[in-house]
Figure 1: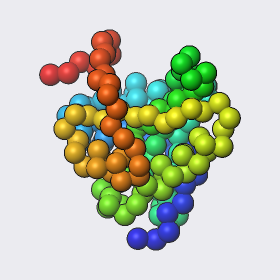
Figure 2: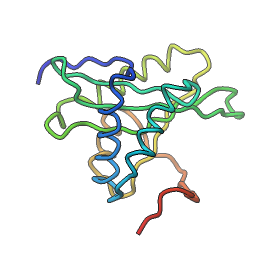
Figure 3: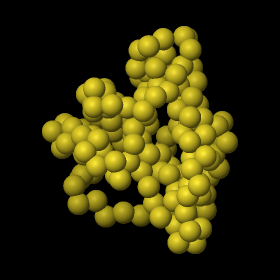
Figure 4: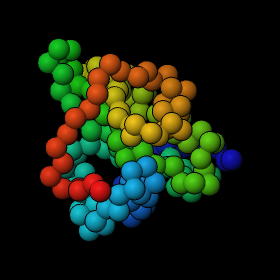
Length: 156
């Protein structure tokens, strides 16, 4: 595998991000996302940076993976958690350090930002491969369970 570099995503990466998000949802949760809604959501991040930021991993100049961070204020810590979302690595680049490179890049940025108190993510309960990847980079399972009421995506 060529050297992996990480950079901020640009609007020119939007279709790669849309395809990656759609593929990730289908692979991990069996959900086919509405591509028009998803495309608007991806562009929404570029339109309003307070919503989050995307990063792209490239291997030899070719897009190999993606990751988005969003923000959550913690009154307990008087700081911001960066939430990792929309992680996707193209199949041919898996198990080659793409996620590790993305995480390392985001971790360095988070540690250098004075108001960031930590990094979090959520993962589908049965996605053992992803959980192993997160543990390999030093993340730890929390004591929390996640609950939601989703008004958009209906699950079977």
